[in-house]
Image (cartoon, rainbow, N blue to C red; front, top):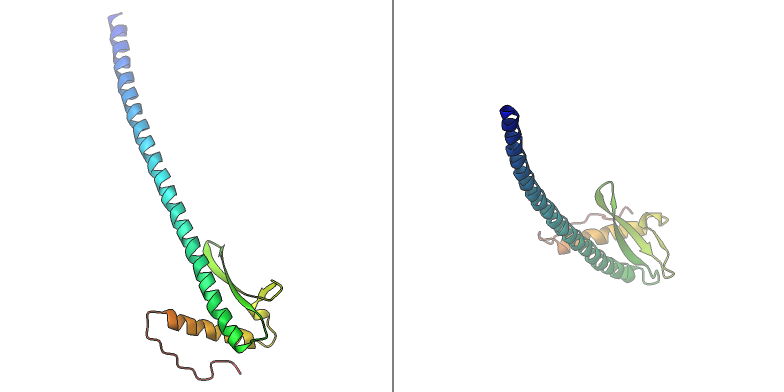
Length: 145
């Protein structure tokens, strides 16, 4: 009987230790869950900032290239559009033209390729102007014809 009583006391002591450990683990779990929530909030903030950056880049680049197209092709009434989309865990740019009716089509769909070549040249010039490097452009027959 004394041994049974002793064993019960040992089990109660183990139970108190286990409860204390469980309490500590629950506190640690709560702390980790709070950290995860904070990380998710920061991640959402970064995603919003990146989306805004792509939106601004698309707008500014579209305006610059559209202006260049209008200077060389005044009757075309085309708008340059860049749509940033996520594919295969990467952000890619769809480069499109939009006509006066709002129809969008690929720059590469232009018959003859002259407009695509010109837009490629405009993009290169825009990059050179906006880059931090020396603004030098050396061109020897930059278009294919």
